[in-house]
Amino acid sequence: MASTKPLFQTFNSENLTLPNRTVMAPMTRGFSPDNIPGEDVAAYYRRRAENEVGLIVTEGTGINHPASVSGASIPVFHGEAALKGWENVVKEVHSVGGKIVPQLWHVGMTRSKGDLPNEEALPVGPSGLSLDGEKVTEPLTEEEVGQLVEAYAQAAADAKRIGFDGIELHGAHGYLIDQFFWEQTNKRTDRYGGDLVGRTRFAVEIIEACRREVGPDFPIIFRFSQWKMNNFKAKLATTPDELERFLQPLVEAGVDIFHCSTRRFWEPEFEGSDLNLAGWTKKLTEKPVISVGSVGLDGEFTSFAGAETTSLDGLIEKVENEEFDLVAIGRSLLMDPEWVKKVHDGRENDLLAFDKESLKKLT
Image (cartoon, rainbow, N blue to C red; front, side, top):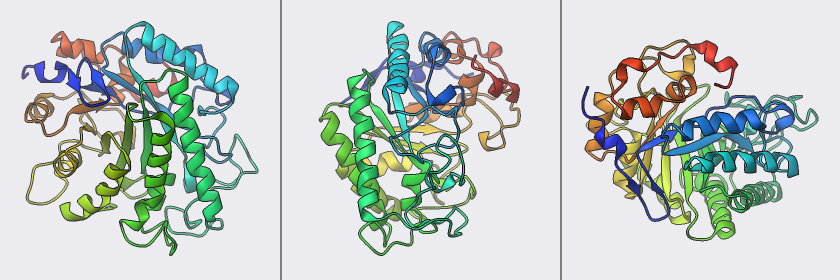
């Protein structure tokens, strides 16, 4: 195995310093009864922090909108009880020297009618279309869009107030922000629709509103993907030029770090180059980037079957070549809180294969 030294170099950007290049990827766990994260959730994140994870990105947590999440055990990021729960998570992570950001989330049209926690709340999206393009509800009005922007901004303000080290905005995988990005789900003809750049307007307003709330020095991470939950081959941008046009408004709005979600980090994004989505994003924006996708495992997470451990040599080579700055680890860290420490200590033989039974408990 190649030296893991590149993974354990300090990361310094304008707004964020981390002890190493590892990130805990956001993973929905569903262990927050009544949408409130409890002591077990705090302990779950603390265990990763005390085992050398450089930055923790929490599971997606719902902004203050009745249709932001699907399910009564998915955490939310509003209301006194939930925010108190998150404040305790921050306290536990900070007590062992860790850093943590919440992933602010709205599921949009992936929510089904009648879902908990608010059964009467209809799913919302740019054009009221499901990811398959079927009409489910009426399109959001401009006034409703403005209310959603403010809900994100309020969550950002609360994140800073209760002690988080930054925020991540979930703009990937076919959820609400991504539904505005994608032409299949955004048929609007007003300022929130139109061409590729026009479809970034909702995200731009969210980023700008969050920045106003948190000031210039608080990190804003933005997660995006090409693929959607129902379509792994979907593309927002089919060429580097299109990707640059898509990213530029987000950079100008105030994104500090891009979290570029792919299913397999080693796959090139465009023909004619070995760079993955994170590599291209860094090249085009000159912003720090997080890469993610089946790190340390031989099967992608979307199947959620078991997966065996694999060599980290290819990953380390890309970090050493500065193709990306940070590496998000998902299932390996879900399975084993000590994964980063084991890698740092050269104990690769002790790394655990992914077992889907691990999804049933917070270890």
